[in-house]
Length: 434
Image (cartoon, rainbow, N blue to C red):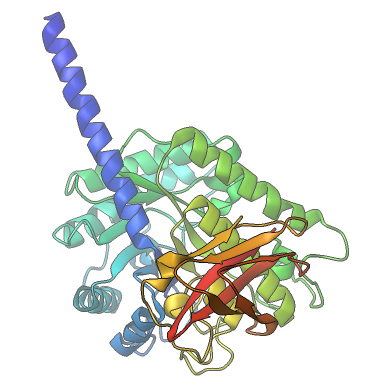
């Protein structure tokens, strides 16, 4: 009997380890993603859900930019009855729109997160009355999409659990009920969950993983909120324009940015669970230099923690492009380099991929403003070096005799791109100054 129990325990541990490893692999495979916003979650639009929100050609443009995953916010709540038996209108045009996106992502080999977005106005007092409806909805969705490839299609239980619903034990109970509902139809699909307080990084201070092992965890980052959301009249409270990053005034909101990332790093190291950045963005009302400094900061954190990410949004109020034209030559350079889009090369210059990449060493990298930086190129007697900042401006240029040069990085902290040319070969490498 004892041997049987040990054998059963070993099998259980193996299965759990396999699921968790699989979830890690799937989370890493998200890589670079986008939120397809202001479409299937836009319930306030009288023509919701519009037919003309996005097209397959938009998704092709995204893939050209380097995007590998799509997060699709959906207003499921608004086609789900609020009284038992909580019927879901599966004939609603909303499902036709979702099915179109599924088809596009299949044809383009993109990952897709089916995200249950707006409409769940939960509080610590009323959540129990919504629990069965919430679980029933996820049963319907899982039944409809259970045959999709679980390596590419994912279910996100709830976008940004409301701040008014801050009882973590109750939220976990709500989520576990929905997970059980999904698992009746599929055990292979990975489910995405997040903590309370609107998926805020600060909430990870006391957050503990759930029991199901085939889960991925997510968080959002819009700190400092008075900077990223300044000027938007739809946001409550309204934040006036004129706030810079880093701030020159009260650092109250900005301190949340640094503390949130500290808590995310601690949680990731403590629990070793798959984790990605599900939403982040900076609005168009902020000055562009500050927007660049903010996206540099976020990009550096993403790189240092090896996180997949989904930017909000593509060409709306949180733009990464300089005009309505979505093209390699219209993306802001700082977004391009910080998020490694369009092959992460300097605008207007073609990258020649060759053995030179492996011959170049930059160390230390990241470097500090006080330490010398060495750039070494093997198998050469001279090379040309140009260093660009994230806005594409040349800040250093020199023809180096020999195969090594040492620089004192007396420029500002941030992300830079080194262009190294040796003969007919040219490469670009990222540099970080802290």
